[in-house]
Length: 92
Image (tube, rainbow, N blue to C red; front, side, top):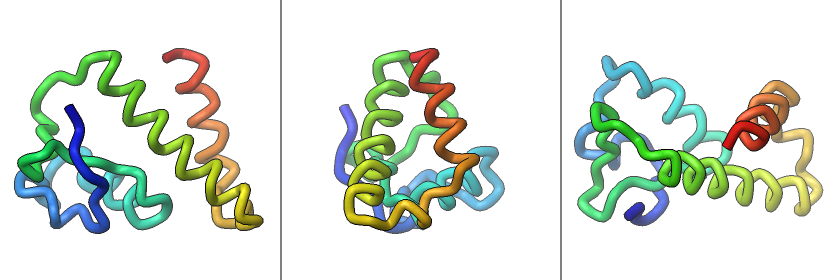
């Protein structure tokens, strides 16, 4: 199960700048605040993710982005991110 949202990737005890996903996670946290770690403050990036876990994370990001758009801040969401999320939403 996923825990609370993080406001910085450094809050995840197992996230290191050399990890393959660090930059992407940092970008999502900084731009949209939509990444949640596990209750023990880990990301577990080396562990396989189930389709359900991925869909739950994707849904959390979509909810945050929809909040941003609803607040009249659509210019804060990049067109590339919207296109990527749309593609992922169709697949999952």
